[in-house]
Image (tube, rainbow, N blue to C red):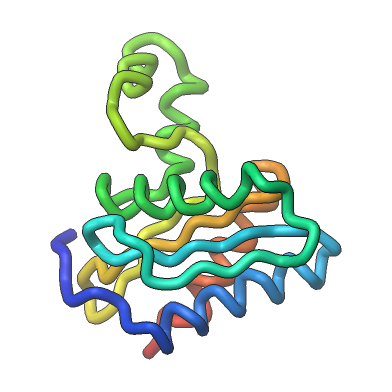
Length: 137
């Protein structure tokens, strides 16, 4: 998949809002970051009482998904498999924890979403809600 134009602020807000709505529905406290294709921050929001570490982690997950053109869960799964997968620990900016997903608009990567604050699966669920909110624009 190739890179396209960077996601605009309105779509970034829409994706973040959907991710945080999913978190609220499940009583999870999350931070969400939206980045452009270069991994630079476009939009960030966190819920009250979000743990401080999740601020940086949400941004790192989004950056990783944008720079490597894949969900961070792919790195998590590769690392869990062991063997040669352990080499990915040497990849700078590769975050091997679920919760980062590229955002695709018109068939091209426009950026990525990163969510942090819960378990890997919870972060991934909220990130997918953000992706789904802008899938058909």
